[in-house]
Length: 199
Length: 199
Image 1 (cartoon, rainbow over the protein chains, first blue to last red):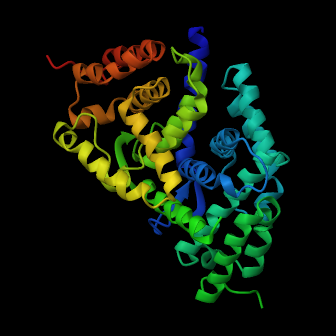
Image 2 (image 1 turned 180 degrees about the vertical axis):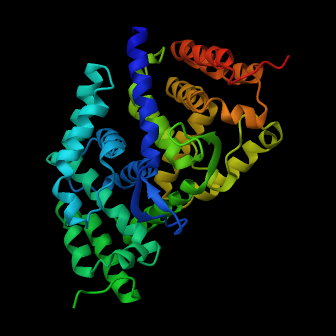
Image 3 (image 1 turned 120 degrees about the horizontal axis):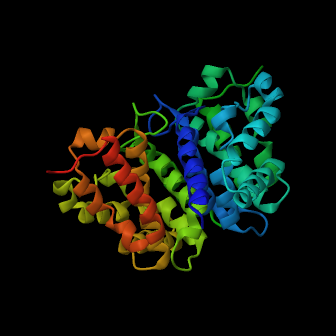
């Protein structure tokens, strides 16, 4: 291994530190005063996949799911977090993230560039069993945060039951077992007054 | 799968949120005003292992290394972060962490309790090839943070070259290839005035 190769890898890893400064819409269940950043989110969602792997409705390679989740949001270093209910920002999300992927992954040696961008692309397309399960878990986690903070983010952003139900169809399609759980959180949120209908 | 089993897993995963509120001594390279928390640290160190796996001097199962690093600091939810140069706190670290492990891992269903505490124990003992590589990478990351923040934490805590050199012998013993790189960071830190000798 040449010194240049290791230096390229280190430059990429130092760049990764920036993901700790990208803040999302979700508030922490453990500290509802603070929003979650994307680096800690990425750890939490990888832990969730590890613990919940048996809920996947199809055979999955869990180590591939975990690697996918470690890298799935790296593009937010340049593109920022795009809120799932933010229709305006969602319009050019794909373009912004593609540009970010090109710059950030190109810091790596070429073989690793292909490997990491391959994982990211697989996640984005969501067509493998691993990507489907990863996307379901990634969608479940903000629901858990909203539930355990009494719907703080929903109320601030004026999000309704109908929007939450629609956005979480990703879980319904990708992981029926987790959808049962997600539905119970949504209905309980309505019953507790955390979440209101649009009517 | 019973409802109870899934509920136990979810209780554990909600508990995990607390790791985002455990702050370490290291300052972020991307934002030297803020200390790093243990959840984002755990993501970063897992990413480092993924990217640097070829530097391990022996054959390793990288997916085991990554799982180990995802869980290696969970006990800090109860035990807090124990600074590597804090001799006083290090005295009862093992006792505090063992007690934390018992409480936190027992939230999981029994089979997963064994799996996760097994990974943690393997990391702590550092006797497998996977644990050795994981420990080397975990030791490298604060060095990178100190270097890229101009030695901020070393200066605040009055840490000397001799202490840094001694503490990083873990890297020398566990991963000679990364030790070469770590040494170059240490010497360059001295040469740039980030780090001073004790004499």
